[in-house]
Image (tube, rainbow, N blue to C red; front, side, top):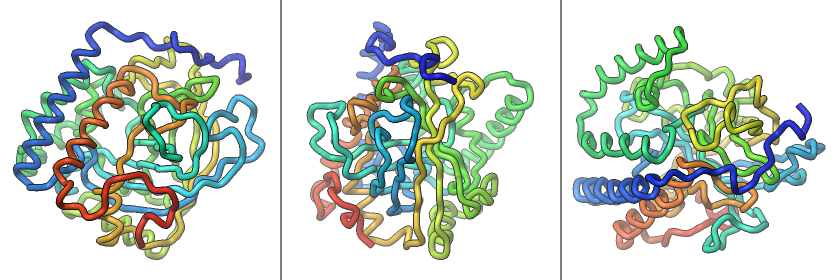
Amino acid sequence: MSADQYLRYDPSVEHILPEEAAAVEEIVASISRTSDRTFRKDKHGTRQQHAKGAGYLRGELIVYDNLPDHLRQGLFKQAGHFPIIVRLSTAFNRSDRVRSPRGFAIKVLGVTGAKALGDDDSTNQDLLLVNHPSYFADAMAYMRAQHKVEHTLFLPDLAYGPIGFLARALVAASDRTGIPIPIVLKALGDAGSNILGETFHTEGALRFGDYIARLRLMPMSASVRQLTGRPCHDADDAVLNSVVAFFKDNAAEYELFAQLCTDLERTPIEDASIDWPEDVAPPQALGKITLPRQTADSPARRVYSDEVLSFDPWRCLAAHRPLGSIMRLRRDAYRASRTLRQQQNQFKVKQRPGEPREIADLPD
């Protein structure tokens, strides 16, 4: 496709519904309540999303040389190498026998340029990806799901067995028939495959310099491609254990792609539940991520990654400003969750929360 077929970014591409502000306010209030309840139960502040770490890694983002002009945007404006910190995670802070979506959060260090938010004085760019291409449609849909999370917060793991079984059956039926099912069922019906073989997505849209994009990360090296679809849910900490065992003897490579928005109907910005079809918005390679052999978990590395670091899609260049209702709500929700967690743990964590300035800040 030629560059003139892609929709150019303009602030007018976002359409904020009148009810969004109230929905975001209620989401933040619900996060506060659930955070307080988990803190009183565990005597420790935890993330409200993807709380369970599943591997903590050093690596490098290599931006490809000779990208076409329409891909040479923001972080990818010129070829280069950037150190990265990766935090792998699962969505549910439960036994891994309860299958849940997998997360791949990337912190790119040493990024220069104007930032999306005025109070971000770091030189880092965060990219948050999950192994599902679509998400809740908007803030209002997320608010309804958040209320369900709040009401089932302390449901025992045993209860999730039949729920997950039914959800996976419905996901399989949806895949066969093409009949859509609610996003929450897709999450509960996650296959529980090896996290290292998964394909990850930003779920929502973001500005891509002069354009608009969704990003995806796909296994590239044979070492991780062979893990795609392999079950990994047979023990309480199966996901973390599999990551640690893999990186003890293996390195990994992933390729990063952009799907560029062509129009607001087929590649919508405000409805994150709609997948962007590949025949309309084909994935285009931007660069690759290399992760060398290493110790993927240690007490110091876990504390630093889980307690000191935070990942936020709004910690980014202005050229990669998050777009759409789901991304806008994250601006307030992530900040609220992070602030509460840091307040709860201020006397428990020796190192103050903050942004790394060099890759050596991640402990061995």
